[in-house]
Image 1: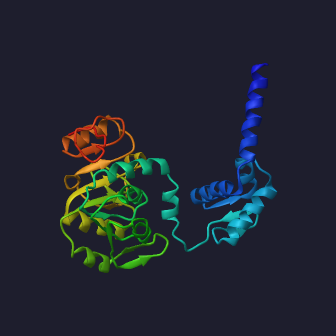
Image 2: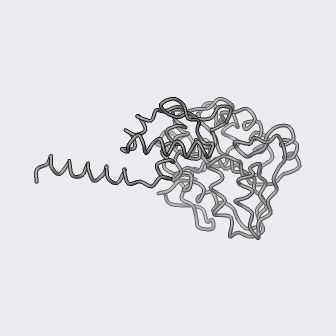
Image 3: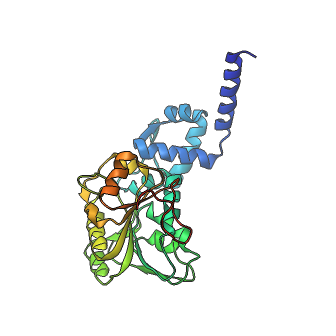
Length: 287
């Protein structure tokens, strides 16, 4: 068999696998494309998915019936007046967020009081806490409250201005509720990191909430995937001297490792020997 024949056979096999994808998986990929591009044509989707335009149209009609997309001439678009940021973030680096959540959950001991923010990374802590006892969790996320609803855990859902797309609460009432609590471990996320500016959020309400959370916490763990090290965000959450540790899914590189070491910030990520004795000791770089 020639190299060309082998390459052609492999290409056709890959096409058959792609074409054979189940409808739900195709529609998941369509939604991922739309969240990135806001609008996309039937022909572009057919080319990307290696299926017929008729198949794409059927998928789009199904998504439209579920109110996930609007059908437009020749393609589809995201519905207007809907905040898709949580959906988009939840589809970004899901494996990394699961790793981070597992590592962060090991930092929680039975009997701890914890605040867990509503970000898509912090929500991944929940599976690791369901078997614990005597934990009190303060949350602003309805999603997270549901995830933590299990015997042995006390969940306090803070009131405030409700954001339907994100299913969380913010604003003056949420801040007032937080003022009633002290002496907890805080787990927060960020939309971007900068060594000079600090961790930051992309919206003002979340930044204000996190600032108060950190002010009253005994320690603060910042949960971020590797993409956050590459781009800063607009609204400052905290100064670096307010952050106890950073939990991420992989080494952020020598420059960040040195920065965290110089600022006495614990860095936890896979592949490095642990120097602390926690439940199933997480792996960390410095300290």
